[in-house]
Length: 256
Ligand code: 13P
Image 1 (spheres, rainbow, N blue to C red):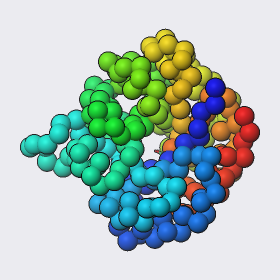
Image 2 (tube, rainbow, N blue to C red):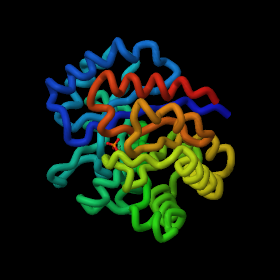
Image 3 (cartoon, protein in one colour):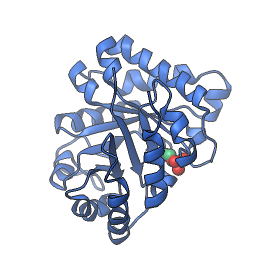
Image 4 (cartoon, rainbow, N blue to C red):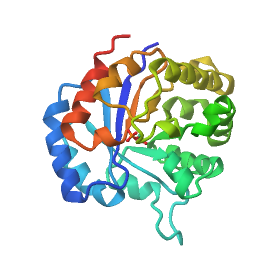
């Protein structure tokens, strides 16, 4: 079963509207030929409008970095699915480790956000990953199991097949320390096995599992060449058009 490679840039809290527009304008010609991959950029909320506008007519899709589960109401600082949809957004990152670490995100809130995204027809990118201490104590499997069990609870098989999982070992994010392709593959394989146990083999084979954590042009090919690595969620290397485009091209050169 072949899964379409999905490379998403998570801009985090970087790029004003004008900076985001410029980056997408630069990126467009560089990735115009990369039609075998799904190319996504996820700017901050205030930059979404400018980026959707700039990406029109190109193969670049736009995602948000968070979503609230309610449709509207007294939730200061939050953004609903309808707001994202009307802004032209098609994807949304949910449960990034920075949201878990700094903003109290839990598997339960991840699950509620995921259900809201799916109900609105957005493609969710659900992030999971262990801390360094978890890895060192041999708890990686346990942590991932809990995150998947809680985060994906009550999701139908049909919805699960549309959901993207991003495996981001927290110790590899922004540190320059990438998991080796073998280590990442072992963990991706474990995640797919959990999906098999929860949703059956057919669904598990359809779900795309991205790797994230210091992925760059230099290591993208080797990572995406692994059987269970279907793309990447990119931070730092997505902030410049040339490094992001090179990463995408290298990832696509990994023949499977
Ligand atoms: P870096 O690529 O900067 O390590 O960030 C990864 C990440 O957190 C993407 O969501």
